[in-house]
Image (tube, rainbow, N blue to C red; front, side, top):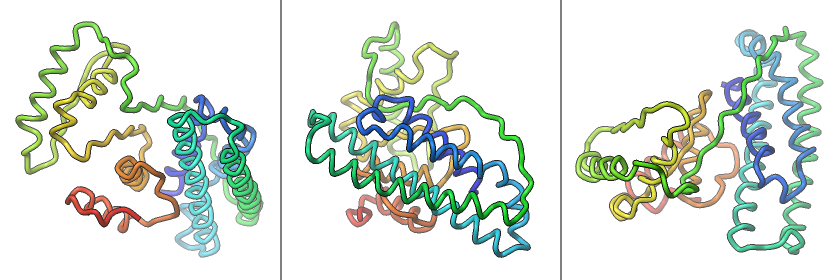
Length: 260
């Protein structure tokens, strides 16, 4: 679990650094250093997860690492949310509120760097075997915003998918999956965005949530992303799977008590 989630955090940091949002706050070096610390620790995780069953100290070490990864992921979420808010209200980088945010996040990142340094140093006490980690290119994260409104010969397909969703899927008692299959570069994501933003879909489905699922996905991370999309703000703090599932169930049941 720790190994899979750590890889997701590293990919999230990489994706954030490659986007324009990271330029708003000037935290490139800090995030790169955090990613480097995680990558260093990641090399011994497979051995650590095998030995934790017989070594309580290693188990506690993995727990501290997992908690640190979630805190860094929370910082990423806050930066994304603040950057989106800045763009929405067209605030300049010299706005007083931005300086306050930079100071707050900068302080937290410094604390996390110190914690990760301690965690990385502690791993040496366990004499864990390192494993060569093969780096894969981070999968491009998609969003629901339609950036290419005109897609050649896709209007008919959009209409067909919308009709299926409205006439058949919306009343289904079981989970429905409607795949869009085609060769790469032919507008599958754009077609999905067109359907998602179609006025008929907007009027028919509430809530309506867009989630990007990576190849190496994490169940808790996906549920958290769904709740954050519904609430329109980051869901901060470490939470176990069970309370996250409860919040999601309350959301899907149409209750107002899922937000906190």
